[in-house]
Image (cartoon, rainbow, N blue to C red; front, side):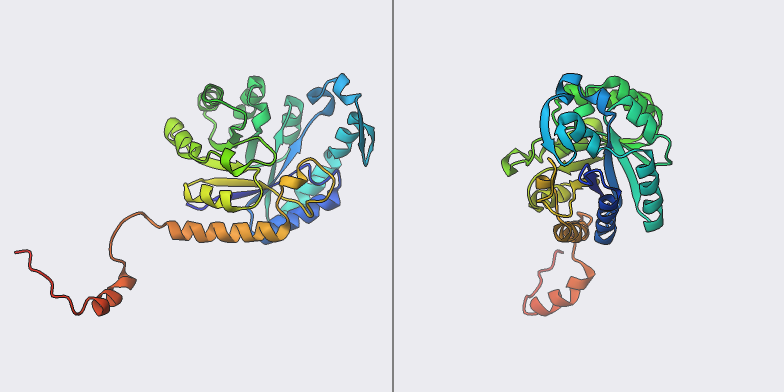
Length: 282
């Protein structure tokens, strides 16, 4: 099965449509299937106390100015929608509140995404499930009881979904990746399972691919030294290209799991075994 690769732009555009376009170009050239953003209604997601806190950023000296600076509005998403259609790559986003989900619903998107942080918001989950679009559900910061509730909501709404194993640490240490949760989730819920990774490098993502994931999401950036909380756990263009190339090789290498002599092996077997006298089974 071909792995659906999601290039997570998230907020790495730093509020710039031009940077967003450059990241879309990176994803397209690398061979990703989709790019993903994050959408928030700042005043709903964060408390006034949090927003009033001092915080130095390119947009001002408070958390409010920083959060607002990172958000893209209607005109920006209209241009992103147009640009992705022009480039022939899908886009979608994870909504962090119900107003943002309604905003995204205005676009003719094929997929939805439930971010790990939003798993306890059952009203948002019901809103997403009601759209009946194929939804990627990240399971970071979740126990099985929380995943049970989400799966129940999506099954009740008859909404197609796949779970994504995820560990919400930034970066995720190799010893914390717990990739054996991938077959656990697949067996427990009888559904497709992907992987949303925040580790440094690409080796862990390759291991996830070998475990049979159906989707892979990784953050991308133009430069890991850019401003932003997600930049350091993101893949730069050359590494992202390398990762997707490796994934496609792994897909081919996994095969069908049937142990038999392959047609290409027959002449080699005849040559290397020519000195062996075969025993009769009669």
